[in-house]
Length: 548
Image 1 (cartoon, rainbow, N blue to C red):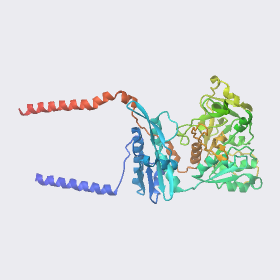
Image 2 (cartoon, helix red, strand yellow; image 1 turned 90 degrees about the vertical axis):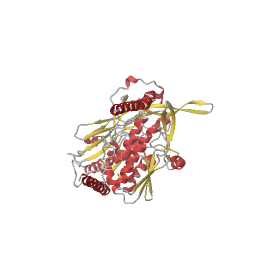
Image 3 (tube, rainbow, N blue to C red; image 1 turned 60 degrees about the horizontal axis):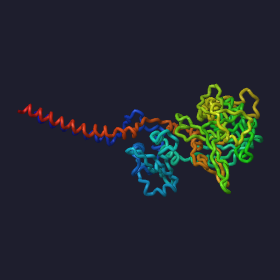
Image 4 (tube, rainbow, N blue to C red; image 1 turned 90 degrees about the horizontal axis):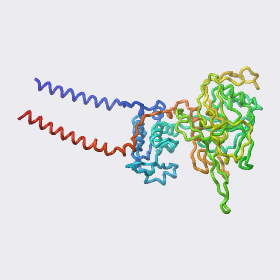
């Protein structure tokens, strides 16, 4: 009877196991048990993955010999792509050793990274290619796996990179599979720079959105039609205007905002240019009359008529003497060019290189019920200079009195969100406009008190990269900051919010591990052997006692 019952139990267990296997093959579910939910994809990422309708190939160049801690980056990338593949089998990936084709990778724009490796108390350098390449149809998109932004340590850089993985892949998949659905108007007609000076920024922006030049000249003849035409664009960018905005133009922009149009304002309230400084050695910085003060004031912001100096700044190259017949050049700190570290908790500015500004003015925010998020601020060691003021290149030779650089932090860029009051509320309108709105629908705008943040240098009629200094090779975060700003303003899906993802990753303290390695080797090798020996003695003693 007991034998029959045993066979029945075995049979039931087999039936249960077979049933579980069948259910597991039909119904698939993964559980993320990590505290920070690092393997849980966002809704937007899942949507992008599920919309892939033809094969997508991902090559990841993180195979081969590289520092041990970067195995973590390899592991996290592998886990993320496995999640992609489990959701959509059309997404296939493989890891490739880049050293066999490093020259080809460099030609494709995949620049290597040099890493400091510390092992057994010795420091050495390793070269890796932290990139992935997504192929979809006839298109390819490069995906950076290692963030380039300055970090206090290599471990922190690695953590930032792991936190950014989902955004980088999701952004690349969106770019390569979704096409360009949003339109941007680049406003002209008020003394804005020529396109060659905006080439670097507009080229990058054009990879994601449809761009069009939009002049405000027709406002004087037919302002209502100009408003109608501008309303067709999702975002308007106003870059460094130098001529006054007329009331007709302001009303068109005001009602464009009231009807939901996004705006990115990059404004110079003060005329201060390096060209005139380099020519004569001195230049007068004076106020520009853009006629925008009342309009911005109604939105909750005031750009002041001043320039700021900051002890944390970039440099300019000047002639420092002659050696024989050769002029010798040297880089000098130029306090009017502050290098701004951004707020790392905001998705627009997270993990950015410092942003270079040139003669920026300070921004005041006003209490009017609009939500304001400060994006760029000076260091604590900044000083505000009222205008007009005479600026001279001889200032580089004057010792800096640090006691005079203790003003409160200065605001340079702010994000505004809410329903904006019209600048023409309770005023006579400059022209008749149907359906005038005294208050906007919920909307967003970004205001930066420096137009040069988007202006690249030009050498021999060729535009230079906006994000790099032509003399020192130092990288800046200008291009990424502006691109993220546009993404945020046009991001209906919330993809940019992935940049705010935060993970808790534990790293090994290499110095401590090296100094205590003998102790831990002893603990992990000798102690188990001693424990095994004592267990053997105790087992034999107990056996003899039991059976003797």
